[in-house]
Length: 115
Image (cartoon, rainbow, N blue to C red):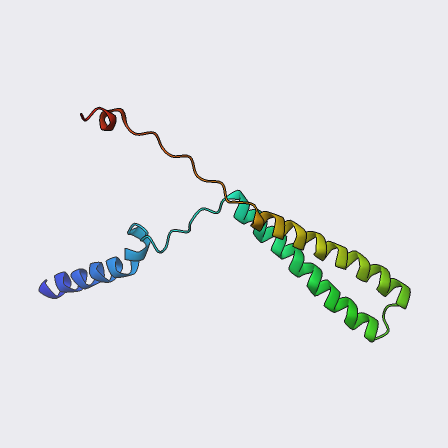
């Protein structure tokens, strides 16, 4: 009987040990901050820029291996460079613009009437 109670206690302790990460509230480091629209747009523009750069590198490899004619290479390169330049200009414009200041919350009524 005592052995069964001891075994049950060990089983409950093991279950709680395994389940604790699932049932505890998340800590501050585990909560992901919410990304605002400006940061999201910057990330999308950087992805567009990086994709254009990668495509330019791939295009150069294909041209060197003879998969593309010189005319196709020049046309594709011009289009990809224009895409990268557009993305860079948009990134610079967005980064140069001041970040919007969050609106201040109004003071509660009881805080204003303390005098």
